[in-house]
Image (cartoon, rainbow, N blue to C red):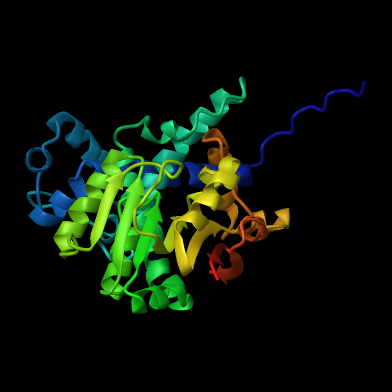
Length: 346
């Protein structure tokens, strides 16, 4: 047997790289506390506030808020003012309703740390506990839907929706659009806003997501034609067949039961209706994962393994459509990082 190689001294350049990464991660962790605790929103409303007044406005413990203010000041999320603190430009960028908000980065940072810890422990046993891990941190779950909406809502609205004819065709038929695994309803409310002729139904397994979705539909005045209910893909039944059945970044969660899922999709489509499946485009070439635009996909695929899933290549989805008699078409978006595969009942 060969001799074990001795570790080399770590160079200063690598230490500095790790320190920058660590400080960036901690900045996002501090930002997550500000997002989830409503501290950014309340400080924006008050404009200037001391820690105790901020704690009272956000209904949070004053001791924790004082220490958060120190940390947020250190990472340049807030500045001192004459009578307290105010948001910096960076802090305002984390406001959940800010255009192009940085909120998803903060939520993803804390979720990633949670999933990394779970993956590290589960490697000993090989267990894959499933989607329940997403609900293990009560401060994260309410932000999971808004995180996905902020990340992917603009992509859908500006790029994918105009790039696919199936939506307009369904609207011309005054049809029904179904979203299985609808999250907080972001996909359907955007469809409803663009196509007033459409009626929409969203289904999701997390009651918190359905609560948020129903509230959004009421707020936007869509409650008469956009409905949501708790349920899962496997047990989905609806009296009216659909013109569109969407699975947005959800198919990989049920891929192990793909025969059942794709049969269900075909059974619930009207003639000329389409199943519309949006997934991250897992690359054929591993070298692409080194690109900054793809790195997070590689880590997310590790976290998907914890949930019992893995990312898919578009051709796999197209083949599954063909197997049940739906005609597939592969559409590529965002320089090949995202794929939408449609399966049409001709």
